[in-house]
Length: 597
Image (tube, rainbow, N blue to C red; front, side, top):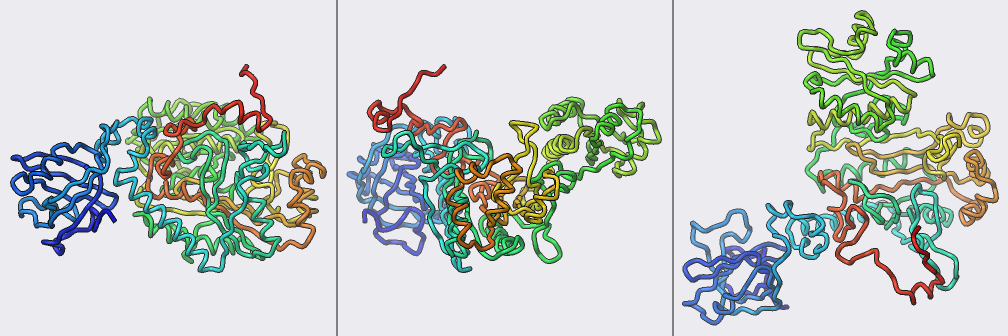
């Protein structure tokens, strides 16, 4: 070894010992001819002194040193003077009197400072281009170490409960997971393509057919969808698990203790709002949409949406009565202290409501003297306005926002406003972790691409509640699935389901969504074929473990979780990818490029 100790372990107990350290020059200072070097490795910092009176040769070499040079130092451990002790460092009571210095590697001046207090001022694009330098920061090193322990904790948890970790294929086939596939052309089979798995969905179900019983893996997944704050471009990891002979509650009983333990062991947050049995709250999808305007509600704050449809159905305000006459709803959102919102802020909320499909955002302000301020009160009348105040329990200093449209649009638009109000009023307590299950998802909804077409609302492999009878007797939009999502502080943390293991039910479920038997056989041939050879009832879920860690640590972007992330446009600036390939490689793959139109 080129060192006897790391830069983070020496204390006064090693006084007078001869040691050898190695690392990067973090900081250099000259005082009265003595050179002070803060030597850094991933374990910490140790101060090294070079005194020309004690060792001129080492001092002359040290005089060349600059930031980020990689060096090795041999010397004696001595105590620092009392007035120079650094209580912030484990090594703060000692320093090394250098006897010998070796320069392993010289370094150009870094493109940005590594000081944690200044690095946030650096351009993110520059830091991503030089990610290997950025990784030297203590905060990123600590995060990588934390992530390693986080992954190991999950592995230990499942192994202790009889699960087997199994790696499923990376070169796979296309699977309907809601995003575009990454395709890999085959050299051996011209014109054919593999697809990188969006999730190991079919493989883990086939493992259940194969008798594995309890499977898990920390699975790499690949989806060609636009990046965002909680979605890393291209690739991510999920804790994939599946169990045989289970019902929905069995999955919950396995996952809840793990999520509580991850919160307690890998964050500073406290788990709150458990039910009377210490379990996560369960909310039906429809109740979540109605009360919170989203199927991933942040329950750290209240702000519940209140239906007022019947109350205003026959009012003189045409926006409300017209929406009800068209089969829609009117919902109200009372915000404590919202009367302080300026007109500019209300206009901002109106634009946010429009992102949910709303045409506008009506409101009533309750002034401190109890009078009402609103352009709609004159249409509602004092009596009806008073009833709205009563049913929403609004008081002086509050504001009430309204959504009037079809049920889904009114819910989504007020849900977006609810979230914006919480941001503005700082209601999202960073010390809390509130987990909940969203259950009873609809099996079908109208397609986003073809508005008149029925399509799967969630996972197409989900067992419908009521089985074949529900598929044959109920209207498609009324059928619920054994589908559930796990939500943490307003973010979807996991999605899962009890799977459809019956070929006949699967054919019927796909038929309702417009797929022929031949199409199902073609797209899911392995799964359909396997299900005809004896399949246990099974189910599972797949927490997005990168996203969970991001939420637990209040990080600004999921990119902060990765050692080598893509930027906001899906590029690896450090490796310069994606990149143009050679003509020879294209020929080997039987691919010819055509000019972009």
